[in-house]
Amino acid sequence: MPRMRTKNRHLKLRGKTWWFVKDVPKFAQGAVGKPRIETSLGTRDEVTARTLRDQLLAHYEKIFAVAKARALTIETEKQTDDNNDLYWVERGVAERGLRAEGIPTSIDDVHEELTLHAVAEASENRRAGQDWHDAVDEARERIETQTIWGRELARKIDLWAGKLTYTQFGDKYLERGQQRTKNTQTDYRNTYKRADENLPPLDNVTRSDVQQWVNELGTTLSKPSINRMLSALRGLAKFHGYDPAPFRDLMVTSTRQSVKRDVWKDAEVLRLLTEAKSLRLRQAILISAFTGPRIAALPKMTFNETQRTLTFPRQKKELSARTIPCPELIHDCARQWTEDPYSISGLEKAFGKLKAQLEFGPTKVHHSFRHTVVNKLLDAGVPEVLAARVVGHAGGSVTTAVYGNKGDVEALRPAVNSIRYDGVDTTVIASLLDS
Image 1: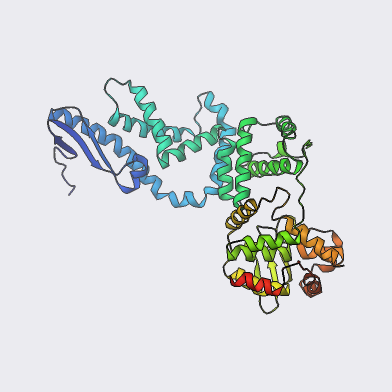
Image 2: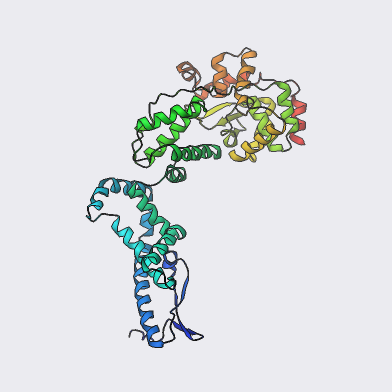
């Protein structure tokens, strides 16, 4: 038999005023925004309190029903979430004109769901003398900004309406796209912030809009920097189902020259090593000075004890991962490093801090080690094609064809063992690794 409801179920007398009290099921707590509903009914009359109680119960039972249905399908939604953004973008493009004419669209149910929650909350929290419509609008704004479910629904509406900013689109792109270093993510976010300030929305931006912006950027940024920004915007547009054409094949000119990267002098390398307080940072500097890796590749370097080789993951325009003989001078250093390396962000922060403390200018950066290693190899009489292979420069077809196979790694061993720095010998390196 069904359980009988007592006359005053969900009612509680506090002082002389009746209150509505009800626990919220777990599946609906995200929608309601709290685990328990407690609200004054503003009346001393028991019969009136029951009537108000029944009205509130009707509101909340509708909300609970919607929440329960959503909870049952949430796993399916998670599995198809990668396509959700594109779905609402495409529906919006197809339906915005229909809604303006009063024809039902796919976004109507989302608006209705938000309104249902807002009406229930307004019924509970409406202030004395407050206009009913104002109370509902206020409740809806709170739901859309302060509850997880409400933010999700508001996001769908913005996607459908084409109102998301580059920054909002960018957050989703960086979350779901390929893995990027912390610095690259920061650069991308700065790009999207600038785009918000200077470009029309993604669904309305034109090639001429972007070209005008690029011309303005050319007065303060270098050409490579501008091209990286355009690449970030092309990836963003493509990921969310928009046409990336406005960000392609633009005329990029700059009155600002790129900063030249100088090589590290022997005395400067020795200074870096002796001033570095962290053993891991000294290890990183030694490996960089003798092999010239990009900074993002160094934390993911692997060491093969048997073959005495180092392998760096593929970076940027490199065709594949790079395997080279391990220089004899840093054999123990390389092994120790791979046992406990820095993270990419940790290495960037530690090296940047050391460089700033020693007051090295903008022409001396970690990437300068690549130029330094190439110069060392060429000065030792190593052919240019071999020098390019050692540091992983994206050479032409000759480099790839002659030295692209793993069997050719041994041909590089004399080259890597020719690299020397004044003041950095076996004894000094052993001391640096022991301290």
